[in-house]
Amino acid sequence: MFTAILVAAGLALAFGLLLGIAAQWFHVEGNPLAEKIDAILPQTQCGQCGFPGCKPYAAAIAEGQADINQCPPGGDATIKNLADLLGVEPKPLNAENGTAKTVPLVAVIDEAVCIGCTKCIQACPVDAILGAAKQMHTVIAVECTGCELCIAPCPVDCIDMVPVSVGIEGFRFPEPQIRRAPMPPPQATEAPTPSDEPANPPQEEPADERIVTHG
Image 1 (cartoon, helix red, strand yellow):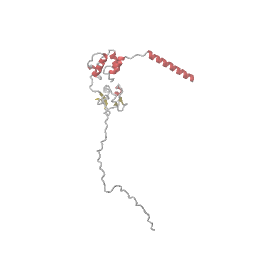
Image 2 (cartoon, rainbow, N blue to C red; image 1 turned 120 degrees about the vertical axis):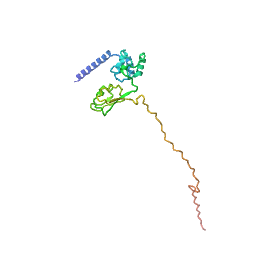
Image 3 (tube, rainbow, N blue to C red; image 1 turned 90 degrees about the horizontal axis):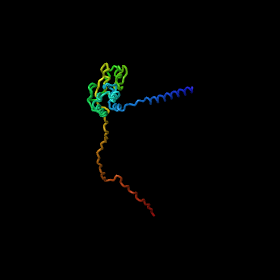
Image 4 (cartoon, helix red, strand yellow; image 1 turned 30 degrees about the horizontal axis):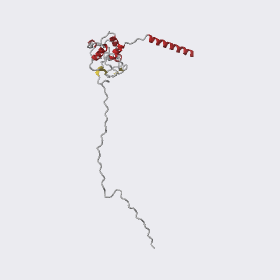
């Protein structure tokens, strides 16, 4: 029994060493430029650029296989940042990929109409929708990227895109204010009025008792 354990441990150690050597030998370095481009993209994973996500689009830009103006969610700001990074001139957004949004949007499900088909859950690229089969679905607003990929699969048309009223970037806690309790007005103190009789009249000392003797 002990020998079998030693053999199994030795084999596990040998396979671990082989896997470590193989990982080092076949390691593929990532493209630093693609990583910088990916950091600029909005990470909506919407596919409007013609690629399955932001990272494949970034790799295509780095390899010269895609232009910098194919990201509608990023709009002109993303195009300018990409142009500055790559040292090229900015260009207008490609209309074939869509139109830029003036305000960020998030999906909202009409839960009373939802039939629980799970099609929107399967379409969401960032897992921002909660629900189960034949159960009500709901959107996690802070996770939604506004890609709109959940709208088309919905068979009952119960998903709408609404503007984000307050985002994390624009939210500010109000500055704390110290509230002081109002001070009571000073009360006038009346001077004690002299009285005819003192409050503690002096006590009379007892007269000396004299013993009178008669001769």
